[in-house]
Image (cartoon, rainbow, N blue to C red; front, side, top):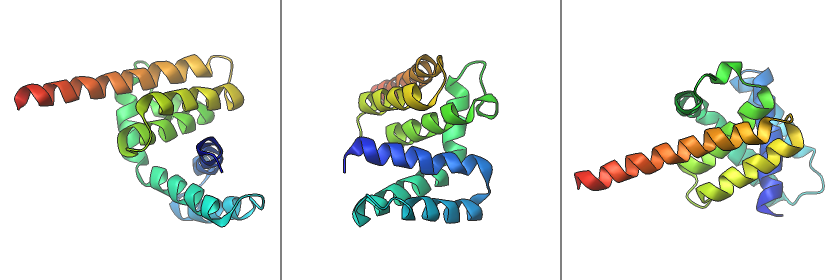
Length: 145
């Protein structure tokens, strides 16, 4: 199972969060992953764990996205774009195994498949600002040492 497959299924599982509360989401996520008969058990487990990890950080992720998405608050974004942004922001901020450039590229690819015509550029711009903001924070931290 490739990282791209895991990411795409995680996106699909996470997308369901937009339509239910926390407890119902856990059940929906379990059902979605359970129906992926073609995937090995360890792949299913990884998808479920990643989706629930992202879901557990939604408030923090949305706050960070609201800061960099000038003129666009997360509550106004399309559900597809918001889900892609949340997944990529999680990878950028919390998953040390995924380089930021890879997270952005994969998010743009998901946006090309599932989003609208302007989605890839929108996603790229917001995630680029997020990464730039992190780089500026890192530079400030280094100066303080």
